[in-house]
Image (cartoon, rainbow, N blue to C red):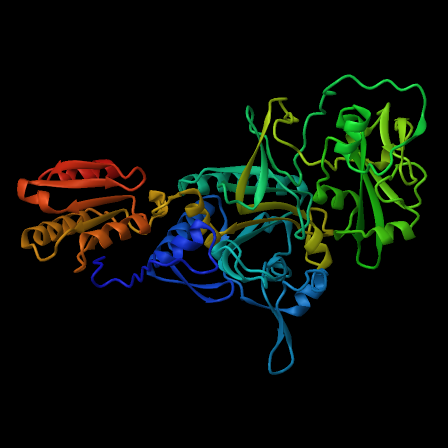
Length: 568
C-alpha cells in the first residue's frame, strides 16, 4: 500500500467522549469513525485488523471440526417467544415491526435462530455431534454506549453452538472449545486468562470467560499466583481464611448499648474487636418475574458482599437497594440488624457456618448482641456470597490470590437443554426415543478484540499492534520524497519486500518527516524503516515500534535484516 493513495484519515484531536486509549487511538489513527452512538464504521486499516482477527478465529475453529454458517441479522420475534426470552431480555433487545406488522428483533445473540436451523433437520443421534458457528453483526441497544468498540450497540461477534446426544459429549466439546480459544488468543499475541464465570442471562450449568489483561478492563478477575486457578470475582472462591487474631472472650449472650454506632469500623473501635468477629448485615430487594421481596445477607465484618453471588443464591433476576422506610415497614431496624427472629428471607455466608463468639445487630436501635452463636442455623441458609479480596488464598492450592482487571473477549457455556427443550428441538436416541439436544454455546467479541488489543498494547504516542493482527507489518518512511535518491531506494525496497510477501506500506506522502513519524507511532506498525539523510552515507534506520529503538543498517543489508527480524 502506498500511503499517497491510501484512505487513512488520521487526526490530531481525540473524540470529545473518548476516555480509553483504544477509543482515542482507533479514531485518531483512522481505523474507525463513529456513525451514531455506539455504532462505528471500519475504515480500510480497521477492516484489515478485523479481517485478520476473523481469519485466525475461522482457521482454528475449522481445524477443531466446526462448520461456518451465516444466519439472518433480523430474527422473528416468535423464536424468542418460544424460548421465553422475548420479555425477559429487557430494553436491550431492539424490537420493531415491518410493513405487514410482523414482529422482528435485531439479534444480540442467536441461540434461538441456531436451534431453529437445526431442529427437524438433524433428527437422529447418528448425525451428532454438530458444531455450527457464524461471524456476523449483532445489535444490543445499550442504555449507555461508551468506550468505543468495547461497549457499542452494533458489533461483530463470533457465536457458535454445539448439539449433542448427551451431557458427557457436550462437556467433551466444551473442553475442546476452551483449548481452541486458547490457541486463537495466543495466535493474536495477547496476554489473556480463561476464568470461571457466572452464566448470566445466557444460562446453563457452567461457563468460562476469556479475559485480555488490561488496566482499563471493566471486569475484575481473581488469579492465583501459583496455580492455574482464575475466576471472575462474580464467581471466585477462596480457601476458608484463618482467624486473623484470637477470638474475643464473652461471658454471656446479651444486648450491649451502642448509641449511634452502625458501621463496622465504628464498632470495631468501640469494642476493640477485630472486624472478623462482627456479623455484617446487607439488606437488598430481590426482584423476580412476578414478585419482589426483602432479603437480608449476613457475612463477616471483614468481608464485602458480592452481589452476583448473592443474586444467584436467592435465584433473583436482580438485586436492588432497599430504603430505610421499606426496612422499617417490614419490622427491620436499619443499622442494627440481627440474623435472629427475622420474618423475611435471610442468607448467611458459608464462612459463618458454625461460628460462635460474634457481635451482631440487636434488632433494636442502638443495641448490638455480644457472644452471638450461629452454630444452630439450618445449612440451607448458607451460601458463598463474599467478594474475594487481594491476598485471599486460592481454593485449589492455597497460594495468594491477585486481583487484576480484564476485558472479556470470549465466553463459553455448558447450556444443556434450556433452549432445545423450550423450542421442542429433539432427536431420536439409540432406543428410538425423542430427546432434546444437549447444547453448548461459544462466543468471541470480534470487533471488541480490536479495541482490547490496543488497551493492552499502547503507549502515550499511540497503538502498538501485536504483529499477528497489525494492519501492516512494516512501514517504509521516505523522509523527503523530493530527494530522488531517497524516493528511488524506498520504492525499490518496497517492491522487494512486497514480492517476498511482507505486508508493507510506503509512506511516499509529500509531508514533512515529523508528521510521518508521528503517524507511524500513532498507527502502530510493528516496524518502520526510515530512509533519510543518512542514505548519502549508505545508512538507513530500522525502528521497533514497541521499544522505539532505532538500529542503523547498511542500505545493502536492510532487506535481509528486516526479513530476519520478521522471520521470513
